[in-house]
Length: 260
Image (tube, rainbow, N blue to C red; front, side, top):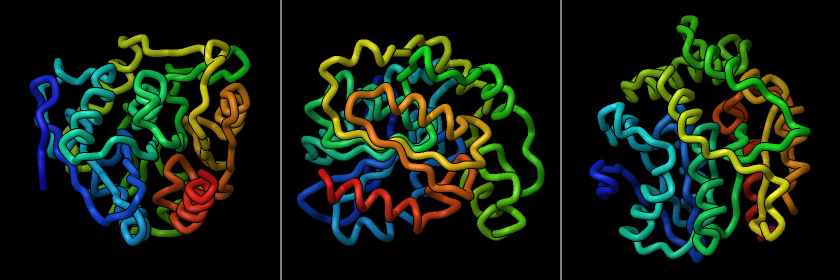
């Protein structure tokens, strides 16, 4: 699979399928390109699907000093250029939301639509409150056996094999979990949605009732401040609904794509 160089880091990506529209999947802190296998299997039948490892993760290793979320848009733009893709729908999970939201604001001509799965990305508003210190503490603490803050607390009981698989895929990242929220905070990338007067990217926010990192009520309140955005709650799932309830997630994504 190909790699592209962006700001001195080799960024790994994969391209599968074909179609008139391209989907770019941007993973969260617990994942990498492989974590999207349940979406890749479905959507590559009708779309071109691009997955990648963010810088510092899995097959895109770099020193901690080169992990800078402000570079995410340049990294994914380099991937798109190398793959010959002018624009795409971005499907973003958690940390990946900082990739898609920055692209939507900085390079809107390259974004056909934006799915913000369990993430605020760079967006913030005074009416939507969530404590970043709590998030940083939760993602930095050791996970219980086959558990993760990125999964519903009861997910291992319902699907032990799935929980094991999530941990195995995540384990390939070789990262310091505490570094991610620290670097995001230091980058000062936040954009008040009050300033988005000309924002016209079709946007879908996704959450679920058992997300402890970015609770559904918080994401719903934030979505209400983004012009034209829609919100969906997938119910009985945690922070990673795309992984925990893939049928529901894929159905909502398919509906969103059909509306573009």
